Image 1 (tube, rainbow, N blue to C red):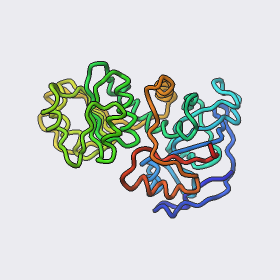
Image 2: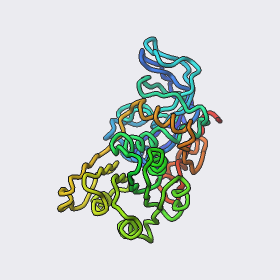
Image 3: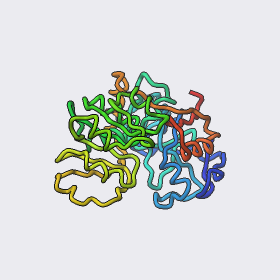
Image 4: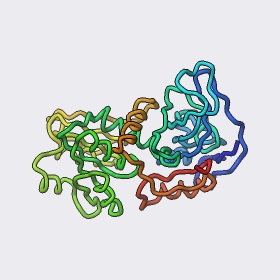
Length: 315
């Protein structure tokens, strides 16, 4: 099968197009013809130095799939040949999705939203699944609450929509190029992080502090958010938090550090929101698989307004 392989760890020039062996499904696995994948920051980190994830070049990376089931293992019960599916592959020691075919255990696979193309659906599994876990599972966002979301890239842009669908009012910090887009996605207030201080905005424009903070930026952003978080508030981060927490413990805050575990459950949640018209994939660009190096350079750069998707089967 056709695949883009990393021949070593390093810069984007390590990608090489190769013919690699087509995988075969084990008893509980499905073989999926990959119609589209997408590029996430973790893809770039693994390309640069992925030994921490059990990755050994030469290998295929990539952690989003939308495609069609071509074969099933003998113990598979939930899918049939021809089913349209989407999912985020396992990272640790596994082959990724920058290829024509991929195998995955059926437990992490979900049916693709019926109203999305494969290129649209491929933007959702990793970024959207992370946002779902942060806002719904860990953050427990509810109607009438206020959520502060830091960063509106691939994860944050979907988190805004999920929080709004949960009935929360959303305040989000965004880059200058995504301020308007963030409010179009449903945020009550998008804060330009380059020209505005989020604590000043919340204290001057809102009557109350926030119930939930979701940080996709890192550094000391999370600890700086404690001053505008209500007692017993919840904070979720996908990056290691830094900074001096001081007396913030007196608020009895709950802090969640989130690394997405592969599971069908959040994908089913995303599918329902998409099919109800409450969640749209946020896509910046669609490139062919052979331009994966360019896609990585775009993700590592700045100015994106959504996910970079790889069209593998000409969807």
